[in-house]
Image 1 (cartoon, rainbow, N blue to C red):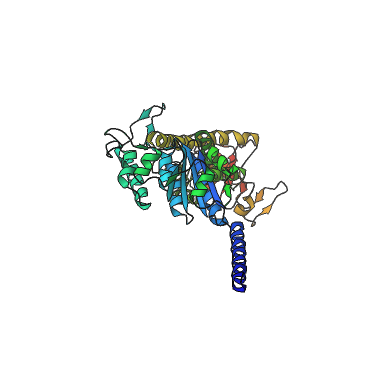
Image 2 (cartoon, rainbow, N blue to C red; image 1 turned 45 degrees about the vertical axis):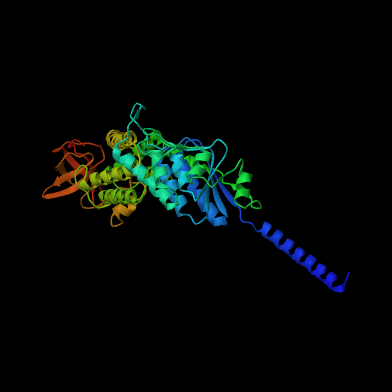
Amino acid sequence: MSTYTRCMTHKHAVLLAVLGLLLSVSTLAADPIQLLEIDGEVGRGTASMIRGGVAAAEESGASVIIVRLSTPGGLLDSALVIRDVLLATSVPTVAYVDREALSAGALIALACERIFFAPGGVMGAATPVSFDLSGAPVEVPEKTQSVVRTLFRSTAETRGRDTKVAEAMVDPSVIIEGLTEEGRLLTLTPSEAQQVGYADGAADTLDDLAAALDLTTAEIVSYEVRPIDAFAETITTTILAAVLLVIGLLGLVIEMMIPGFGIAGIIGTLCLGLFFWAHFLVGLAGWESIAFVMGGLLAIILEIFVFTAADFGLAGIGGLVLIGLGFYSSMVGPLTDRAAALQAVGIVSVGVVVALVLAAVLLARLPKSKLRLGGVILSSAVTGSAFSRGSDGTELSQWVGQVGVAGTNLRPVGTGIFGSERMDVVCEEGHLSKGTPIVIVKDEGYRKVVRTYSEEA
């Protein structure tokens, strides 16, 4: 062998070694594959899970997001949130139709850049279905059908797919030659999907899918469902949502009727905050819900600390109405069916009524037991420090001991008349009728605390 031949062989060996080293380095540095699995019905927690999984994929620099679908469908509002998240991410997305991607699942698959089928996988049958209050299926309004058709068409168009095929999944009147007949929804098998450009390939397993994507060296990282996702889905169920709403509104109503801000207000705010946070997490609450709720809370704060109108002030009533609108809008989405929307209206309405009734009962009974839930936190901030205190802690001022009459019904807030002066008062005994003799027992600055006056006392 000549010297030249030996040199060339040596160079080839070095080159191969370098290439092998580079290949091993690239293998070690391969970006992971983020796997998101939707197994079962698409629920409110599913949207939260997908949002979290996509965020994790973007943060970790994943090479691709695989959404494994095995779902008969579910809530279209949740599917709409998932669609928007998948369309917005910069990470390449792949739908893997493992068994079925029907109804809401079909919309999720369409939102992915590429679609692969497992043997026996099916995709389509996405006409919207609504249910009445008894649970029986009913025909959805044409307006809803039109919105869903447009969503499917728009999503397919965004991903460069035949829009007519997408419409045929929703509208049985759309006919695809050789695939559907009039009056039947389109449901694609793997071969049919390949025929109309709705499948980029087939894969028996996830490893086969990784190989088809030229990512055999990448690690498949499964995104686990977070406890927070399951918690959010539980909190947004009808029963718990109603309980949180009643307790939250009850706390705020009590605070509007008792001076200061105390335990009832804190519990009410926490319950309403938890309600709103959970619905925001699952994608139902939007900026309009935030605006309604914040406006309502502001009106109630003004009612508690600024306005002191007799009985129940207009600011407080307006605040409850705004909060009701905010929480109704956070319970329904653009594709919520009629029964669910009516249910949301019922929950909010019953919540407001029950809160008002319970508040009236509590405020009538609590003073008798001398147990007050309000005014224990911000009492000093509200009353100020301009007055000296007696040995029993009662505020001393020129008004303490003044006798007058109730100018309005005290429930327990109202107006008292003392000589030529009319002022806002709070009755520590609960309710008193208009015209009842009263005496001021505590001066709280902006309001006076009174009780029934008896000459014998």
